[in-house]
Length: 283
Image 1 (cartoon, rainbow, N blue to C red):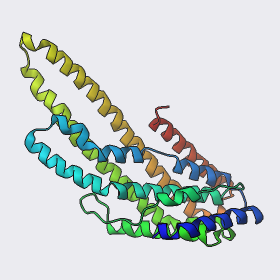
Image 2: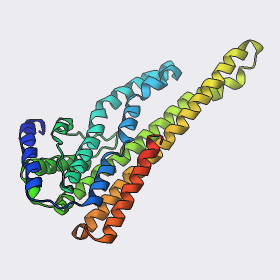
Image 3: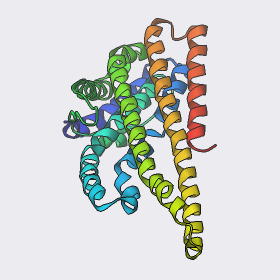
Image 4: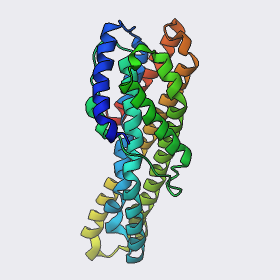
């Protein structure tokens, strides 16, 4: 759907950018900072890839019977991966567009249009429900309207009001999917580390000493890896929750975005998101 409108969207962006400059748009610094921090949060895309590639990591540790089931799961994960990342790409573009409307400068997002998909499919096994599909469709329609139909004459408040319901549902989808990734990782961890837990106690012959030593080193490395990734799941969930709360508060206070209290609140959310991003980046 969006690809057929791509040319119109690019032209619409030119109108939007020109309109922003000519109409003297008001700069809403805290809105812009919150939107920028939300767009740059990170974590979700990496964890989505990790979920997709589960089989590649666990395959060496699987029994023949378990490997057959794992291959089937691998096919299913790869089939839904594009839908899972399309949700994030749409929300990122929404936040980037919101930042544009809240700024005084020029900002060309036309190259991002092709990143949007053609639609989602509900998937009961993954937790992607029909309401998530409907919200995705609503968000892509909003972005089409904003970018292509002279929306520069309207306000940030209108954008937030029209987008909040779909933003909340899509963030709910991302939070649910991140929890699915977390659960899948826990199962992977049990599979990988479980072999060592079972086999090492019985490998006590002198002839096994070198092999046991190497196995223990490998076990420690994998344990450390899983501890670090567990922390990334926690930070990603914290960040997505902050984005949802911040946008909700912005919607509730959209008629007083220039008020001191609202500005402080949005600045605090932006600060928290930057700190979480730093944690995800290992800063």
